[in-house]
Length: 199
Image (cartoon, rainbow, N blue to C red; front, top):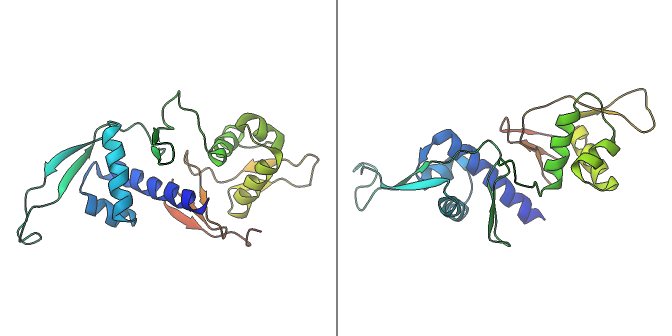
């Protein structure tokens, strides 16, 4: 699970930087996204196969930077479908684009986030479960995480069932939580610490 979460974060950072840059070399992309070169190479190769980026060839050589040998290859984004990261699933050897209307969202936390954004000002866990197709315990765990990092608030006075409100709608990309409870928001590219540790 931790490896999958790390891979998801890496691909999110890579996709956001690819969209920002438009044209890039792998070393520049690696430096900006701060992930391993192996991850950069594998992800860009899958995006090439999927028709999202093209390899333009070797950059004009700068002798001051590359005194011997060739300069880096340059790549260009040619199919920008939207802000949600195109995901490559190694175990299935499959490229999934959540920006496409006919693409099912397989990530349960992303489904939860989208459902919360749909309801916005007033919703119950049961409403989120129905729209996001989540189990009750799973939904409550996600809501607890969003509350801890300041995205959702439980309304007071307490009601039965509890009523929630979205208070930080940062964008379409689901915030990503680490095991310790800190949160990375790919919409703002900021990290948030929870009010108290997640248990």
